[in-house]
Structure formats: C-alpha cells, structure tokens
Image (cartoon, rainbow, N blue to C red; front, side, top):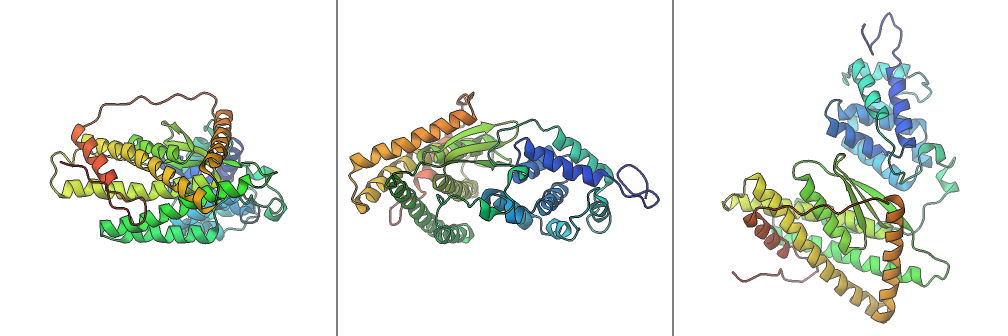
Length: 390
C-alpha cells in the first residue's frame, strides 16, 4: 500500500503510535475514556470504533485493569461492551509496540478497514482538545497496583446495586407500563433509603468526612437540552449539583458517591419512562404529538414535575430512614445540610464561574402532557399514580 497513513514498501506507519500518544495527552488535560469516544461520535468526522480501539489499547499499555480508579475501569468496561470487535482487536495486539507498528497493521488490515488518514485526523482532533477539569487522576498518577491505593468505601453495596440494576433492566424490558413502574419504584426506594442510611452511618464516625466525587454524563441527540433538564431535576432532588457544557453535550455532576449512583440509575430509568410515555402520546393520536416542539415540551414538562415529586419522595424517605435509625428528624437535617454544603464547596472549587440557563417558551400541550406522564410515574412501592382532575 502507499499513501499517507498506510504502508509503503513494508515500512510501518507512525500514525497509530501518534494516535495512542494523543490518548495519553488528552488524559493529562483532564479527559477520560468515555469522553474521547463521546466527542468522536459527536464530531462525526472520524469513526467511533477507531476511537474505541485506541482507548482500549492504551488501557492495556498502562495496565488500567490493575491500576485505574474504579470509575475509570467502569468506563473501559462499558466501551468494551459497546465495541466488542474493537475490544478483541485491541486485546490481540502486543503492548510492546512503541512506534505503533503492529497496531497500525491491525487497524489498516483485515476487517477493521480503517484508513491511514483517519488515524492522523483523530489524533489531531484529540490533540486540539483544550484543558478541562480533572475529575480523576490520569494514568501517570496511578499507583503501581490498585491495592496500594484502595478505593474509598463510600459507594453503594455492590449486591444492592446489582439488585437495583436487575429491577431497572426488567422495567426497560417489559411492555406493560404498570409493571415497569413497579420495578422502577422498588429500585428507587432501595437506593433512596440506602443513601440516607449511609449518611447517618458516616455521621456516627467522628473522624469520617463526606467524600465528594464528580462524574460526567454524555448526552446524545435528539432533545439534548430537555434531557439536561431531566438530569438536573433528578440531581437537585438528591443533593447533587450539575453543570452543563452545551458545546460538548457533557454534563458534570458533583455529589457523594451514593447520591451520584442514585442519580445515574434514576436518570437512565426515568428517561426510558419519559420516552415510552412520549411515544404513547403519538400512538394515541394526540394532536401534534409527533412534532419536535411537542416532544421537547413533553420532556421539559416531565422533568419539571418529576423534580417536584422526587423532592417530595426524598422528604418522605428521610423521615422513614430517621425513624428506622431512631434518630430525631431535627438531628438528621443538620447532617444532611452539612453534606450539601460540602458538595456546594467542591462544586464551586471545580466550577468557579457558572451561570443558570434561561427558561424558554415551549409547546403548552406538550408541557402539560409531560407533567401528566410524570404524575403517572410511580416513585414508591405500592403508591398509586397521582391523577389530576380533568
């Protein structure tokens, strides 16, 4: 082969090595594995599978499986699940390949079919990324082995998370709305009570301080702005702060590890419920339900009402958890306020200059339809949906 980024007289290209180097450089500037693939997909110029290969191969070179923080490893695991063919390709290339000779051969040859110039373009795209807020230590700051720096024990119990994910998976698979609501309600109840109980347990340890973390959410079209509204409504009800980078379609959430896990699970589940209800409105022949203005307003109305209902559910769950732990509510509220203050302080440290987004006018029919759908989303086991009079 000949030409830029391909082979010529058996001499290997250096583009693959430059691409892997661009991954490492982007990490030093604050970006994470899922960020790079998301931004590649959003840019539309280079194929996301190529980004996945580069990220997963670099992870093998840096021994991320043994060294990376858990959240970093979770991103890599998710990418491997999304791009199984590319994960196998990355696993099949020896890591002792400083110039990228073997990686280039694997990328350009065989079923992958990537073109040499695509490697160069993707490397250039990543090298142009500006510095961003560092939320997790990059590979150069990892310990030789994760055991030397054990993960903090302030997350939800893995077994309980497994139960919640199982419930939400059932909710997403079923075709019956009431059954989906039951599964979602049980999952939400488990996580909310666990979050409150974890806060109480932490407060009883004199030397224990609230550990505040950050996580990025990558949002895709359509209706990105409305999805941000839903994420923000869920976050605010769970003592989590969010900031939105519209040009990147990335939201960053700041809160305790348990609360962030709750926001992540609830956002995924409620977005499924909102989408299902929106599609039902169209199937029922509701006027304008298939138009973009209606659907944007639907999601905005759903987000606003869900936020109110989650605040109400949080208040009830707090009272129930206090009763279970035999703690007066008057003693619990200052503890929760302290946690919120620490989250606010970390948010301000990470994002000292933010502004609130302006409200926009929306389709009235869609707005009210969305609020009605949010009223029908059950948030606690056994609770009946709230029905408003016609």
